[in-house]
Length: 301
Image (cartoon, rainbow, N blue to C red):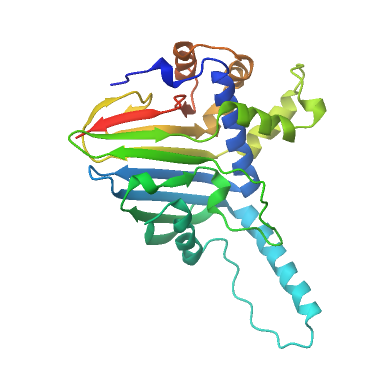
């Protein structure tokens, strides 16, 4: 079933692509305060389908943002002290209206059909379900922070990059779906390097155990998953991670990754690696599932 096509992958920098994508995911989750983001796209044989999304945000971060929001409200009231003060609505990081509005950015014809607030011991957020008529019109941003509203006082930057996934679907018996994942490795490496201080860009050893332990605590409990499910039997695919009719594009379990620092060093140092070798290395790293193909093709009936 795993029909790997080496023409779909550039040999140079494959492991760098994985390494820098992991770093970007860490950065996105940390900056946004997310501790869990899950997305499952289900596709029918006629090209219609659903998108199921679950987002949890750290309760401590939400508390901090609530305080920031109150501060901005007070500042606004002071500027307009002569105006009558309306009763402030309770702070809410997520709202059904915001999620429904974001559906339009996923592609033409995407509609929110269900929304539910969810909570865990450490996080709070929502679970949502969307429907679409044509997978060809879907172009989702897989960046964890894209599901969040703007922070208090934050302005949207015109230079912010979107990490969009595109699809090409051909109906038939069997139906054929082509998945085209997000950022190329060159863009990922450039973005990470530009944002990193010069004294941290070298490969010199010396990251202290204490610093690493602090990093582990920062990312503890975080997870990011993105999967595609076809509603039928898979006949042929080059996808690397297949479970029944579900194809996993990304599954980053940061607890497992950070418990194996030596494996992360392999990712960082393996600048040139063949596709076959890259697959073997990834198989041995707990906590990382990342399909390295530029195009993932699946036929199903």
